[in-house]
Length: 447
Ligand SMILES: Cc1cc2nc3c(=O)[nH]c(=O)nc-3n(C[C@H](O)[C@H](O)[C@H](O)COP(=O)(O)OP(=O)(O)OC[C@H]3O[C@@H](n4cnc5c(N)ncnc54)[C@H](O)[C@@H]3O)c2cc1C
Image (cartoon, rainbow, N blue to C red):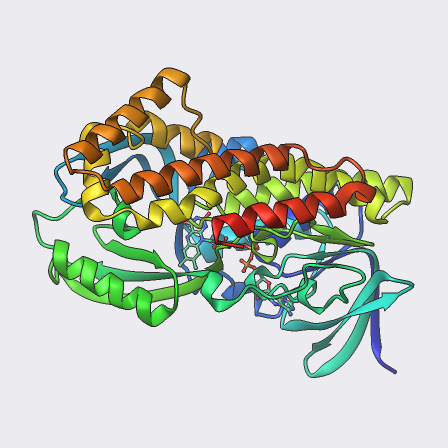
């Protein structure tokens, strides 16, 4: 007979989002099963080094990291104009950390609270009954099994292993993220860097690249680019050779893809929730997804707990997750994502002009973006920005085309944010909302 499991909640994927969710639900007394296709100790090895702001540990009530999980602490990150003539300090303490050890810490918290992990266990398909998701089927050590639960949570990252297998009648946006809507992140680890090169954390916004400190005196040269890994490595090489040549020795490379597109309009189905990279909840201005996944998971925990207590895991019972996510972080990220095409079109000359004139790109703006995920300009500042851009066009230091694209994108971003803030309170009103949202995204050219 086929092996079977049952629990209150099944989480597919034991990465940062899945483990955080499993931990919090187990703390609330639910039986939680986590199915992870990889060996648990291998998770995060493909990225190895990542960073997280100190304030997020406080926000999510997480103990601070300690060595060896904590590699070092930074209090400032510099960002540069493409001509390197302007260097802007962005204040804010963040931890540079070892990803596998951080994930293992989350898994330990979840296990200590009662969650049960199954590693090397792949989920292949959903089990549907009466148009509700009642379980999943998968393989463990080559053996097939079926697991049933009151609620199934897809936290399987870019694979979106459950979301993409659901029938359209249960979950409309079941398409995988296409390759062209991913961001390819490539990291080069270098050692023995001679004197005279950057120290600390440094961002090169125009190139979507960074030079950061890693272990000891070693550094990471990283880039995030669309299209493909080949394209991203090529851009990495061009950027590195233009600015730094070939310093020190390469001691390793890491790479990974993250979704870089809007989240589905609905994050739930009948007895189903999706969180983290599986729901494209990454920060649009950096691609980072650990803490934005925690924001979504925290809402999902509250909503799932209330729904389980009421015994209503239907679309209506889980709807508050949609409402709270889409009108909060979702609305801010949507506005920011809608602005991206205009930002991408800016030339080096345009970006230099913005840095030199100290508009949009200032320490305060970057700090606000990191903390609140949006920059809200006061009317006088907006007038100053508009006048400075127009002056840039007149003096031929900022292109007219960029100005027009920028203004159009800002207006559309404002409309999209307002639409998300008006997310329907009742699932019955969802379809007209989704239709208009689709039209607005089509206008941005990024849907
Ligand atoms: C190179 C790189 C650097 C990054 N740096 C940062 C950073 O500094 N800060 C930051 O916040 N973010 C960073 N990110 C993004 C961040 O890593 C992700 O946003 C985050 O890890 C997403 O977490 P998740 O739990 O949603 O998905 P994942 O971490 O992808 O976890 C999903 C898990 O599901 C498992 N899974 C998949 N399919 C199945 C299946 N069928 N059955 C069972 N299990 C399955 C996978 O094995 C995986 O372990 C970086 C990403 C990359 C690629």
